[in-house]
Length: 497
Image (tube, rainbow, N blue to C red; front, side, top):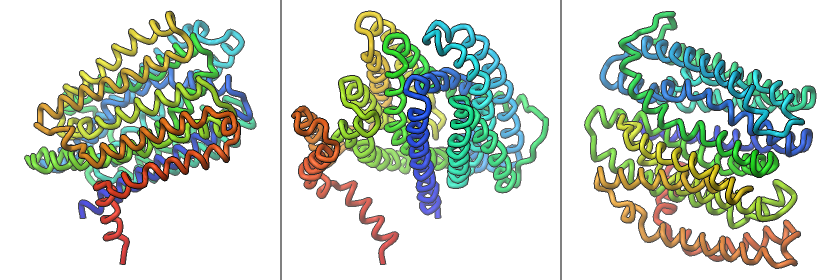
């Protein structure tokens, strides 16, 4: 029953991320066609700047993913109402304050980071973008309750419906109001998420009753976990607007748009893996509460190999078709496109390998190494971005994002391996190493073949050539891979005759 529920939650979470990625690409193409690359880059820059307001909700809402299953496993269901309401009011107060501060700060700082000609448009967009993030923060409370109740499939369905609302509203409002239509469409989406999340929590949690009561004792209990999670979230929240600010200053908003869409492409894969792993966190919390240590280690080893395989498929495999991607998205090829694409892809691949350790620590409530990981990442970004911008400039600022993004997770993996005596090399396995080497060979071959003039400007020929190399070199490593065989066997057992 537990495995069936885990598979259902994971499947819907993955479906949600796929639909979200498709919608993001559709709206990106619409915005570029209707508004141009520079205005699209402005929207990307503003939304990443104002995402700082999510700092008010990240820690407290995610603490519900830990405390809801903990309360349930330790027979404290009667305290769930106090937990949810206290979390909601904490998020409401902190997010309101951050939105107000963000408006005051960014209203005066934006003119120093973008072209003077688009400053009035940026100031017009700012209040609507902040309002959208405010409702997003409030909705995270009830959606996180569903996660803690191990009802991620319901959360995924709500998010899918919200994404479809965003797509439809975006199509209508962009044509009517221009770039202003995007934050208005997002506002519609987030208001829906808030209302739908509240409705389904009331429906599926019999112990929850909404009230105006704020519990200080409950707040003190969740504060430590929530505060540490806020610190962990600092890099995720601040990194994107900071790097985009540096890119805007030294490379222009067109390169920001390229960075943004590449992040969306590979970020969809990252989000897919994160969504699937979030379904595991409540189970880990229950195992920890019931002192099932062996099952925790088994979860880690299995999860690491699966994520390694998914990471190779989602982050490295697309690099074998890098110029096909460039031509499809930007109708051009060149150094900037390729450089940004490779940096984001490789950084997110290494970053994903730390997810098993990351979610294990979240589930057992030990956040020290997660704070250290993110602090190191943030510090390197903070120092390196202006130095690269000043001395090298341009698109190379992307390295101030990519290098720290892979250094921090390496520290986290090493810490987990030492603490729980789990060998990363042994967990990796010979078969997976062969697959990674073969994939690297495919990328190198296709990169060199692309340089020939005959293939360079023919997308169809280029794709067919890349596909032939891809299939030929990877045939044996894929056929002999143990993890792929196990996944195929489980699928046959579940869906076969």
